[in-house]
Amino acid sequence: MPRIALGGFQHETNTFAPRPTPYEEFEIPGGWPPMARGAALFPTIEATSTPIGGALAEAQAAGLQPVPLSWCMATPANRVTDDAFTRIRAMLLEELDAVLADGPLDGVYLDLHGAAVTDSHEDAEGALIAAVRERIGDLPLAVSIDLHANVTRAMVAGADLIDAYRHYPHTDMRATGARALRGLAARIAHGRPFARRFRQYDCLLAINWQCTLVAPGAEILAEIDRLAAAGDVTVSFAPGFPLADIAEAGPSLAVFGPDAARVEEVFSTLDSLIEARLPDYAGTLWSPEDAIAHAMAQPEDGKGPVVLADTQDNPGGGGEADTTGVLQALIDADAQGALVAIIKDPEAAAAAHAAGLGAELDLALGGGSGLPDIAPVRARFTVEALTDGFTIATGPMQKGNQLKFGPTAVLRTGGVRVIVTSRKAQVADLAVITHTGLDPAAQRLVVVKSSVHFRAAFAPIAREILSVLAPGPVTADLTALPFRHLRPGVALGPGGPLFTGPL
View 1 (cartoon, helix red, strand yellow):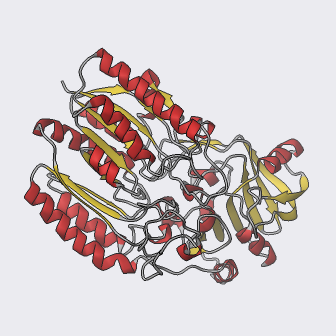
View 2: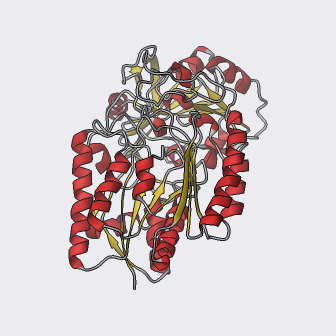
View 3: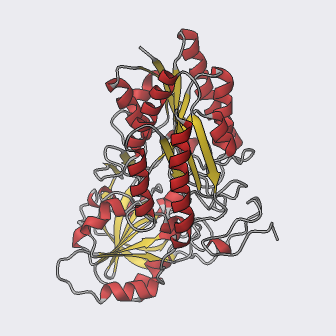
């Protein structure tokens, strides 16, 4: 019975975000399982939507012997501190050493993100893979990664195969972990390294337009599914995470498999398609004022709310969920039947809990990250609901995950309601709203702090979805970012100017 070690580390690093990521953020992340190691790992992740949960289920179903290492993730923000990465790497390696001391291993699976940056490492995953490789020698090593990974040459050189999520929203995280585990089993059976092809594309793609529910992502996804259906190749197309200012940021394609000719055939077909469709990764962004006016002009006919994605304050990309541009525009427009999910403001949430239901409070809400052009909203709010901020996700992407927002309140000013939380998390599940007693489908307009992930849960109830451009750190216009470390010659968006070096 092959013995397989399972572990992981996940962080999507926005090097332009306002806050760093210390060790404590990995212990209890918003919307994801807590840090776990050794015997506690499998009970923590087995029922979750994580890739490692899918890998564990696949290993058990295939009659393999999975053994736990450690796993953790944190909500996207700025660089992982060196202290945090050093401790996390040491924890995983300590567990690996213990597993190796217990007996021979046949392979290792790692659940990584692929866009982690630390104070000292542009390529944290490459560094972690290298450290694991030093321990295991030539044992097979399979890695699953996020669709937003910035896949590096070091990652490809160190792993036997890399398997990326195919869907954005990421409704296939468990499936990707399971698929990577099957690839690992195939690599073990093959007995020698797979053939591989790898390319990085010299064009950054804003995350707003990477969605695989629409073109061009949907077309590329369909072709990947077709070419990989036989299971004889592992295909990873990662459009990349453009908010990480590192040399190797950007889209990439990697193909692995036992037959070199088949790998070349699949790689060439996809490479030609991706090259042709890169210019189509673009779309329309609405001003808050125009989006609100459009939403308020829709008839109240029960066809669901207009959903506004406050994309530049997306906690899934490094935002703090505390910008106020859309909220202020709603108040200024005297919008009725509007709901904002969420504003992170632990002081306001605490004040609402202290005051109690029905109380009226004069608050300066949001704006806590201190970014320029982002001020708190000053208004009188009525406390309409109070919760402990704990619920279980029910939607396609995060089903089974514990959502922990800390003390939470529903506040209303005029016709606008705001869900105020103590912790940040991307709004990717209806439970963020329903746990407060509100029905998202009954609203006229719903604002979500997200870019794309919300679509998996919200699209079925939405009349229409609009991406809104309000001030925030998850910049949609890549030409506005002060890149310093990106390799020269990379286009800042399809058809955009080429990066020639820091000014």
